Image 1 (cartoon, rainbow, N blue to C red):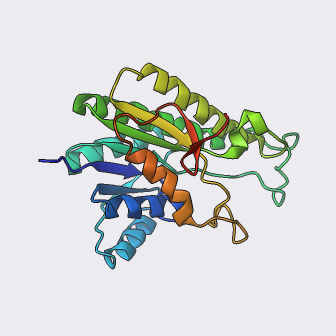
Image 2 (cartoon, rainbow, N blue to C red; image 1 turned 180 degrees about the horizontal axis):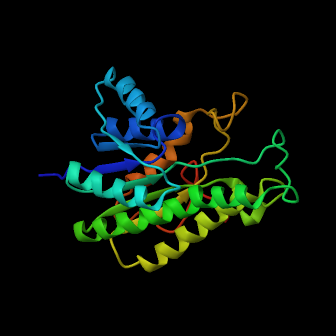
Length: 238
């Protein structure tokens, strides 16, 4: 009998995360919808019921270490296992409107909160998830990164966000190296400029387009890549 895979998608009450959760559920996975705000998560899950998709909602705040650990424990307790982790949740706090776009103006508090949410949270989720995946002998981890974190194309402004994604990329490579001889694969991806609350209405890509690469990485075959950085299912420079 084929084992039904279980996935946890963070920041899944809207945008890219919600679309990733939807697509994975359509593939037959049991998908836990991670949301910092339970009411918003439940509203998103209720919206999927009309498509015949029933997703449990997990309270998950990636800026809180105990919330990260408890979320993984709750998924395993509720669904019996955890095969796929999609680290989608993130914040973008530096804007020209709040006067913090420049690296010369951003406050340490803004950078600290960005790193805590965008980098440390995913790391703690990976640490909790890997121990489960090792017992199962299977795992797929997808980290939603950004081209703003590419050292190869690094530019000005948004230093906190850039640092958080560059560090997320470094974490991806480090853990991939440590798990190289295991059946667990971990990769990072850039969704592009997407029409979400973060990306804005003028963005060039839909959430459906953005989710495709995440879903591909979440369902890699045993001979698939690990420790890579991808956009539209193709490797890109770090």
